Length: 347
Image (tube, rainbow, N blue to C red):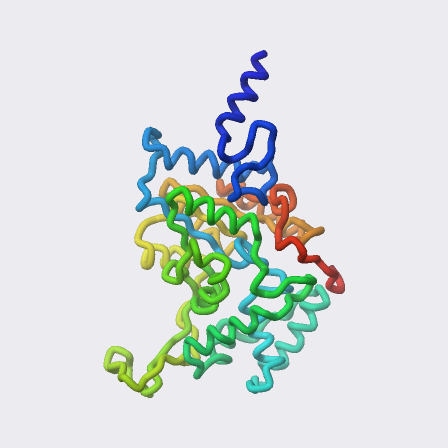
């Protein structure tokens, strides 16, 4: 009898999320498995910080959630990051652009390795700097249009999926769920800002407007500016804004903490990431009373997970006090329904 009462009480606590028989009732979490420890933990946390009677109550203006992008909201194994895939396309397949011999040699080797499921070679210089140079002279609008066109192309390693569709459905639902509970959601990514803003627009734009996207920064200048410093140049009616060709800042690791302080102004109470590049902002959130969840790419059937890497990262997260999310064990699905994983040689 006591066991039955306990079960009923647990079910009542989850009304509006799951029904008492386990059937999913809340649209925002339909892509998560019923027994997901991470989702149960998140639901409990959200319930606590949104209950005005709770000692853990957090006003809406302090309910900040920050998500990494690649590998957290969006696939990063197609067969590599979106921004690197874009760069390889620009260097190798765009006939309007002539890459340097060194960049071209690296790109050929990198693409061959990635498409055969092997380790890509180290870049002789910063990939982000290469990308900044590759799009030098574009207006911001031209650059975003280029990204948009690339988003229509099929991803490597999957059938029936374009680069614009490569989002993790459970994590998109999580963004929606948090937004519905008074959270202000930001993205903090190592990818460049304008690229990110274009990529997320159709999928996440309803909950994450452009001004809440933090990313790496390429230098910009007015078309008529020349060698004049920005602080000394006045933008003119005939000017346009151009990508100038240099990387200003790569938004990784400690830089994510700095951009949170500079651009958000308060510490987040929730952080979601998937790699060592996200550990700094996770630690910053936990240090200030928040929680951090790290996504493990451990699904080798529906995605290109690497178990050894996932297990090692999970152990590191446990030692740091961060919770983990298993794609394999906690996601009901990962990508859009008709996307089918193919096979890269070697994977």
